[in-house]
Image 1 (tube, helix red, strand yellow):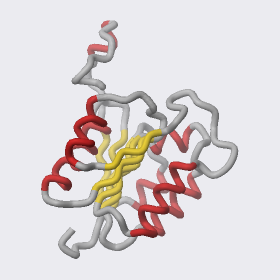
Image 2 (spheres, helix red, strand yellow; image 1 turned 30 degrees about the vertical axis):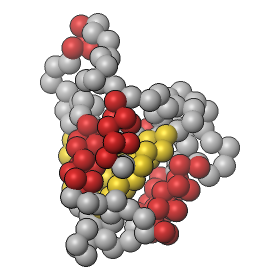
Image 3 (cartoon, helix red, strand yellow; image 1 turned 90 degrees about the vertical axis):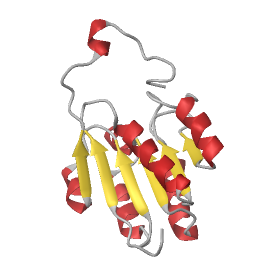
Amino acid sequence: MDGEEGRVQIYTGCGKGKSTAAFGLAMRCAGNGGRVFVIQFQKARECGEHRSAEKLGVSVTRCAGGRGSSPCARRCPLLSAAFDVFERQSADLLILDEIMAAIRHGCVSLSEALTLLSARPRGVELVMTGRGAPDALIERADLVTEMKKIKHYYDEGVSARRGVEF
């Protein structure tokens, strides 16, 4: 926004809060008049973040199959959507939520993710989330935050809660 150079941010690690941090940034950008586009790899189920994003005018595209779906037979359609956002210069902020999982599961290759980084227009902020960010992406990023689990109630058998985890 405002003609500033965009940066590449990565939220990774085994702790909770990677997607939450990315959606917080989406709220901040949209609240300041920015154009925000979110692509969620590995997440098909609708949740509170989608309903909130819609109210803010934030576009969210989700993986049709969700977690555990088979890798795409050809180029992942969500990856194509990300390239389209760049080509049309239709976003100030692009969030690729759980792209690290898509890389890990073979839906997106590391080479494709690096090509996407190279295609990023100067003014677009790019956020990538997910556990196990590859070193090659970390090296290219401007900001990397690792979420580290110290303690989590899931370990005590607490299930995901509406409004908190989804």
